[in-house]
Image (cartoon, rainbow, N blue to C red; front, top):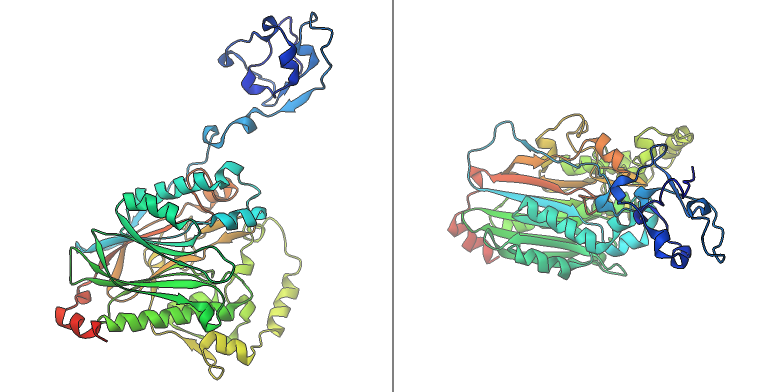
Length: 457
């Protein structure tokens, strides 16, 4: 596949590897045709650095170079390569409300820069430019500002002030709560200053409760343009560890309890809980969130979150897990709970049923999509994708007083699969953002007298 110098000029520079040989050639040897005139029809791979490409009159000092096979596509920056189009479409509720008191909310785990560097093994299929923070920051902010949400809940934030500067210019005000311990990331909430007033703020350090270094945020808002409308927003990044379902339950239970207390304080206002819950729609913890209680003795705490069944090879059926039967036996034999684990999950070593005081629904499960994007519960088939996980762990939960009017659907599984993993050209994280529009229902109106009385509690 070499090209003879007498009959064809060398390939253009954009197809050739740099070689010290070029510095020894006279200008007459360096004449090439425009790149548009060059083609290699026999193969997408082109060879460069072959000595047969040089004129026989080359300097005696010219060395012999071995043939090197080269793929020109790998030299192109990611922005110039053909990319898979990630298209997300809004899905409307079957019976949209006529109420004008609506707002849009985003929940997004943006993949902390330090975590992206620390866990490079999760992103072996991702072009390195897509992993660089400066690029991801730009893409993430383009996503957020493009959706124009009124409230933004972010998780895994370790560059808060960089994001804040950009979002402030778009009209947002923000607040950050960092994790305790050695972690450098945390949770952040941003809201449009001309749409909501902040009435009260509370942060939760789960470390103080013996529930690891995770944190959560709770905010009470009042709508600027509909002053009778109030809202409590919670933002959480639940512990990742798949084996510690007891800790996950404890964190969610405590967040729900504090949200309920704040909601009652401000006149039983509606609640939104958003975040990365590190639990799948088929799991026991999802059942706990959606039904408000769970008999934990029926489950192995190591399997409460469902995360262990979400390796891409398992999801896509690319390999058979030969240990499945043994794993099922192991799960059956090891479902016992210690008193300490029961206390961690439920707050007391005596109760076997863990409960929370809220009655919650998932916005995406309420507005159903197609079988290409949703599972049997109506949840997205995937909100996170990297080399070791493909599944859903992100949710926006809502209580009475609110109703979702539309959601931004996630891409179909076949499209996501063809990306090879996230981040990609148009997605700045290894998670997909959830975007939901909500309307206040009529029973959400809070009278001034109620607010005066409850605000003094």
